[in-house]
Length: 162
Image (tube, rainbow, N blue to C red; front, side, top):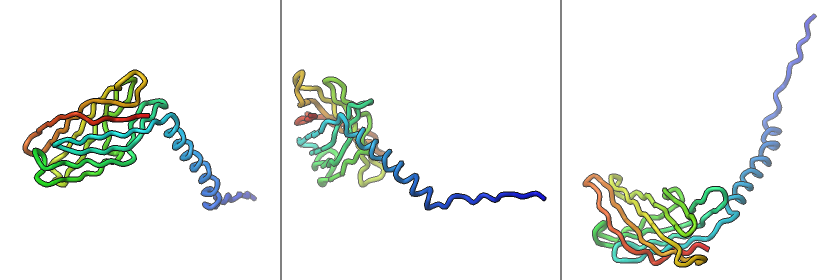
């Protein structure tokens, strides 16, 4: 006679309760690591073309990154907009970001209400003094669309990373 022992799979509830705390701990660790060594970042631009307010942080743990908590770009009536246009800035809009030594560089890629047009804001700043938290520099706003591309530049009021 041949006996076969039938194995029952573990109930899904047991797997869920065993795995959930581990996943929660990993999520907490990634949040702590992201916040560890992070400096707050505030950047402001306000000129005839645009107004930009950006609040975020820079992280110096491992790779240096710029993160955005919230931000807003307002195109003023002029070269790129007939009416004022407000575009929210999120972390997913950031490209080409770094803070290294005395240099702060990042790009913001935004879609407009017209799906054929996209905006690229590049901020290039350097630290005002050796141990200062204030960065001064310039921006370039580039509009790319079906009719080609146009660029406008200007000065930033400042970025503060402390």
